[in-house]
Amino acid sequence: MSAAHSHRFGARARLATLALGLAMLAGCAQHGGAPSRSASPYAGQPQREVSALSPAEVADLRAGRGMGLARPAELNGYPGPLHVLELAAALELSADQRARTEVLYARMQAAAREAGARWIEAERELDALFRTRQATPQSLRAALDRIGALQARAREVHLQAHVEQTALLTPTQIERYVQLRGYGGAHGRHHEHR
Image 1: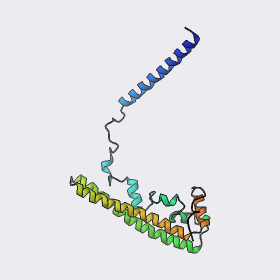
Image 2: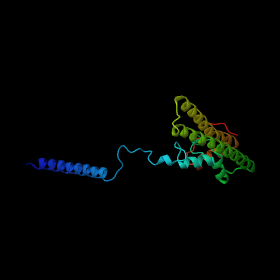
Image 3: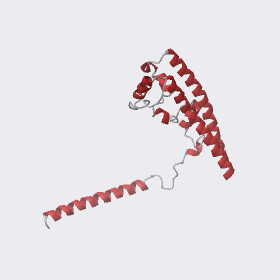
Image 4: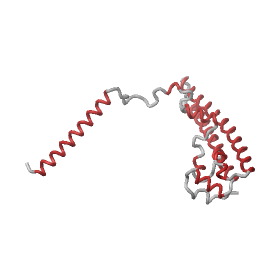
């Protein structure tokens, strides 16, 4: 046997041994208590308050938090009132800007909490349709249309607040906000601001 042939044979043998070892480990893991392939990713979730929403999402909706609903505005240079208030000193807000932002934030929070509560209730009603085995194509369509409208309302509340907040800031403040939030420096330049 030549040295080259011996080297290739040795490399193949090591590779085959490694593959066999990995296969054995995978087999052991599968038979050692790993979840079966038929287990649902929803296992344990029937105890949720609302099937379609995690406990954290329910808490966020009740509190009027954004949950990323205004991400298109935020990432495109339209500041949100909460973060503007958090960055008030760095943005050098005037007393008038701060007062108007506080009013905007309070109004947004109230509307967001109301929209969130209505969304949660609509999700509960959808759960009830299925739990009571009363889901029909018509009742399902009506429930989903209602949920869709409530989701849109919750998102509108947050997006509208970003639009209104942007109108309260100068282009320099918007640019500074974008930088402070870590989004780069080009956002907001192409928008008209006061």
